[in-house]
Length: 413
Image (cartoon, rainbow, N blue to C red; front, side, top):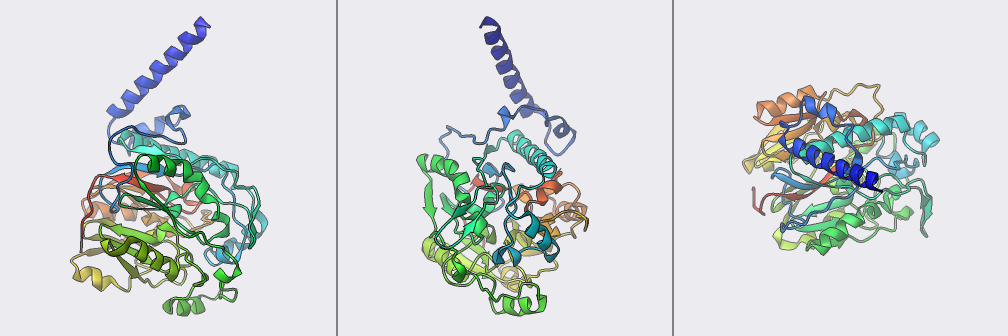
């Protein structure tokens, strides 16, 4: 027993020394990150809490200094089945793959590499003093049924979709994919902890997800018809009940921007508008996009009066922003090879960035054209490998949900 006590004492001393070293190392994005992958997972527990006197939730925009964040995990990730809402939002070249692998785990080797990339991101957060929370692992391969459908789950990788943080409030979103019906369970420990420490907690109306929520005649493979329907504001989701993903929203203080998409309907947008009340202005944006799903691969707010826009999906309301004094900058072209397995997204994850503050941004290390855009704006790029994480459907913005940024509610328009 004496030997065990000495061992534990040495291990504790080692952890204290490593924690001090991490704080003293130079700014991340360079050589030292390569040597952090071997650090024990005690530095990366699934959930980290804080006893500070700061508000547990305080996030008003996309660019104030980041202080506390939820970071997704790869544990237990499974492919969804090829249901109509999944088929409408995925590339047709992967449909046969989904038919074969729906309900099955993501490839283990690919998940392992994605997990390593995500852990490197966590190391950056830790070095910057950002408090990191992790979701609880869930068995997503377990089949579940409601009176309206049967499905398996997806993953706990993308907290940006499940949780909409506005000010001091966390809103659990009514997502439109049946495979994500119970995804909120992964984040409940974090949300309850925030609530106990004083945050507001709201759960939007849980959708039934019966067949009435989906247009059974939606033209899945006809791009021309999709464009025509998108111009009319019609997508695979109907107006049967409210649904929305948090990733279809961008926050700029008192102004919230949202797009009607394949997973966010007008009822969902109206629910948010009524819920937030007169304190906020909710603006609907439209883009030249036959298959919109999540605004953060199309239009990102990166600073006061500054927006990053997808050149292939121009914003139809750009004049409104420009007249308000905003500058819209086109993102660089993505560099992901055609052969890369983007099972759940497009190459435009290149612009799915995360602002650490107004002058620093997290960008995938191979997206050199995007680096140049930010550098021209005087914004420092922290470049990290994230291609394997791309394959699960998101980059730095999607893989996180910021609980706390150092700032106050302001109007930028």
